[in-house]
Length: 246
Image 1 (cartoon, one colour):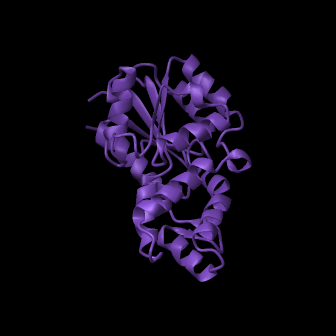
Image 2: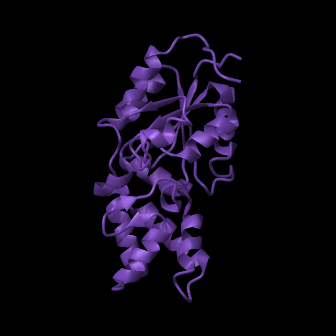
């Protein structure tokens, strides 16, 4: 079959629009310290339970912290925090994510608003599909002057399901009035690539999260170093629909 020409770009947020480690290393350590004050062993156990080593600062690709939602993280942490239920942990994790920002936010492109303006100027509709909460995503994008560039923003709590399910991609396509096959889903994880495949969208991987090229190449249509390379790659593509595997 032939794939539709790209008319919309749907971005993951953390690890895609923002460099994952640079943005979240300090914030994650601070959250662990707040949830387990003075207990380094418990902080490390909590970190490892969701794919983060507080000692080395390394994140595990595909882990709950990287690819999951605040609800997934809370479920893992609640088991290690007697007397605190998962809903309470989720609320604290979501609040910490929402309030993280300012100097810790590290966009994956030097001029993120400018890059997005260039894509919109080329006639592309833009959206965000994240496993962060929607309110948190809006705050982070506003903090770097990019919020108003997006026609659609969905978080894990927006009612479209979570990746790798197709719901966020399909909701974006419906919202902007295009065929899902005309969407390029840009992300840094297997979950992002799975969501693209499930919806029939183009799967574009970037390397600004914990996953490596070897992790993502078998799952993606293309692997780019970062979103900074996206405009050039799009411009080099044939203007007409290209051939895609069925």
